Length: 83
Image (tube, rainbow, N blue to C red; front, side):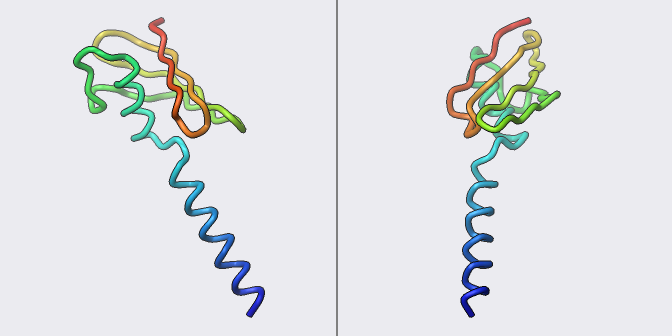
């Protein structure tokens, strides 16, 4: 019984953490916000995602140019700079 409770607890934690991670959709949305203008998430293509322990870096292509982007691991502080 105790082992079952631990397994359930670990499963819940993994699910919550994975839900907060930087998914492609999140990176598209946050890239569009950082790029600004009239760029929508659907217009942004995300490539070369490099996830670290506390940060994530990626490249974004938008109609108005290509960008190097980075953020913390929860994708809160996004910075995209035009190449």
